[in-house]
Length: 380
Image (cartoon, rainbow, N blue to C red; front, top):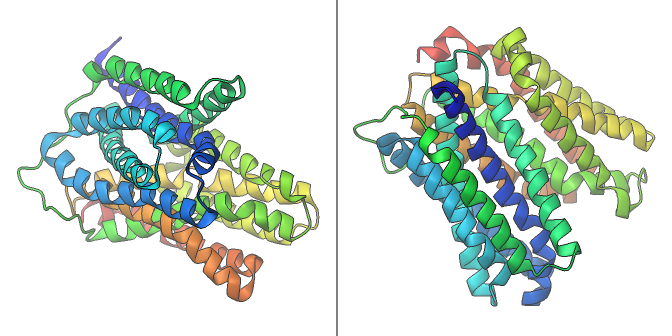
């Protein structure tokens, strides 16, 4: 394996591990709720611990990655995820589960920053688009992780045993990848608190809007379908499945699209495609047409975030590690806080109207594509 091929393999392994580890937790959620005997409200607060841990750790991971390079962040973050996974399947009390989720989310935040910093450097050295494919591997890891854990539990395997097997696979992947990580640029000094500045403010905002789209479809898409009477509640989750498959396909093929269209046109046309998807979804009189809306949203939004990470690595307003940490943190704040905000707005004006507002906000992606990718942004 050549040096360049090795670094690409290591980056793909990092994205795969992060997505796999996070998705292994999803099938364990109902078991955790039953084991702990908690209400939906308490479970919601527990799940919030994972998101808060991620966002807080990203703030620390940015400066540390800038000083030490991406490799330690990826290895520590991935190994931490793996070690914590069995605890999520075992934690006997609400307090221990909250702590485990907080730490699990923290290690996820660390690997998220490290792998994106590493991906930007690998892409720069390759001198061709690779970022969409890397992000596609996160989605693939998520599909494999959720499917494997679900199959294991369905076959009667104990949750802790399934989690230990999954953790061992994650550690094995990291051991294979570890020697192949490359050195990333390091800063002599880095602030303890990462605050976006210059063009990074815009990149972070656009990431938050795109992540908000993903979170809203995940949390509210099924309710939108069932609320409009297009699907029974038990089957309404198919909409998110269509969205997720479309987004994964869009990312796995996205590098070729970006190579052909460039960053600006990818953001512009992708944003318009996602907005068109919202229009189709919200006006659809029948379920198949609504599914077409989910498909368009997934395809349109799929490559915006990978492009934004690439732009964060190329700008000069901040060290790339800090810029990527900013985009990651603000983006994840969007997926964490956004769906709750959608629910609050929906309570006042109805869920369809809340989605129309979301579609209108997404207009910022095509409108700002030129500014985000222009010469002024790269030379800020």
